[in-house]
Amino acid sequence: MVAVQKDFSRYDRKLEFILRTAARIFAEKGYHSTSMRDISRETGVSLAGLYYYCQSKDELLFLIQDNCFGRVLERLEGRLTETHDPVERLRLLIENHLSFFAANMAEMKVLSHEADSLAGEMHEKVSGKKQQYTQVVRRALADVAESRTEKDRRPVDLTIATFALFGMMNWIYNWYDPQGAMGVSDLVENIARLFLSGFLGEACDEELNFSNPAEHEPFHMWRGTKIESMNT
Amino acid sequence: MVAVQKDFSRYDRKLEFILRTAARIFAEKGYHSTSMRDISRETGVSLAGLYYYCQSKDELLFLIQDNCFGRVLERLEGRLTETHDPVERLRLLIENHLSFFAANMAEMKVLSHEADSLAGEMHEKVSGKKQQYTQVVRRALADVAESRTEKDRRPVDLTIATFALFGMMNWIYNWYDPQGAMGVSDLVENIARLFLSGFLGEACDEELNFSNPAEHEPFHMWRGTKIESMNT
Picture (tube, rainbow over the protein chains, first blue to last red):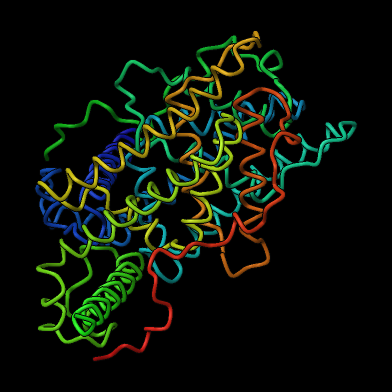
């Protein structure tokens, strides 16, 4: 039994290595311009080997997108159990999204640029997860807005606020350098202050508790980082 | 002489029709997956005819991107002469960007997704204009921040604020329907309030003068709207 588990784990790690490499190539060249031969060359896995791990290039894109939304949502739901305070929950959400995607920028670009590259059931499944994630974000914003009803300010439209927040966060793949001088914690803190103060119409710097830098730690989507040379 | 001018204007209108159609196809299929034959089919202009207007598919993409940044920047610079008030200038900038791109969503997607599809001199020229536009936005934000130095709030990082604003505004091509129930003026008003209040750390609803809905009018990049059937 141990041997079987070990084999399974090796299979998973190899698949993740293939997905991570494919995400990088899709981000660089675009999905439609990438061939399975390109992925074979970059991974060092033979074409026959690739087809042992996935049935088609479509399935690779599906697995990347499905894993991405699945992981960021799962991680968020875990963290949202920590507190019932609406502002704190929104802060956690911004932190979770930014630290996840700052560590997975190629995947973020693939999610954005290849949103319509899949069809049929695969497209439906990914769109469903994306919609589910969008609903969680919208709900978090609605909770913040409701918790502040005593203020007489005209609230910002919830749909616009939801997509404005996604826009602020997702745009980082166009300009942010995770290896550069600006740390993920700076990114998180500034975007959280900018968005929350704007959404609430008041400075809410003090409410934002940025005391735990560990929360901003980059979270790599693919577990293996030592398998770059996994050329079997 | 009149005849020559008339011919020139007809040439311009026909080129704009080709560019507008090409932008729509690039947005739908991606630049690399689009052939000159696709553009010929959609425009009803023969391949030979297309090459009379441009030398290559690259040149089409260049003309779309160069025109886009050129027009939005030129229009902004015209409007910024209207006032010296930093908050008012930032509002004008947000209005200008959103009303321009809400009317040119296909072009916006092409700017975003095909930012690295050109090479050499063409890429350099477009990047230069993009950088110039980014600098104008950054300067506008710096002016707002400086005009409020009396406040003891830690300012939002200027680089993050600049790209967060671009992200909020540019992300609309992923969700906003210009033909839908939400008008451009709602979009402009909500995003301006959200961003400015967040950047200043205080509600600035009253400072934002939304009295002139004409300012939110969509601004189509291509002049001709009656030349869809220009199939000669």
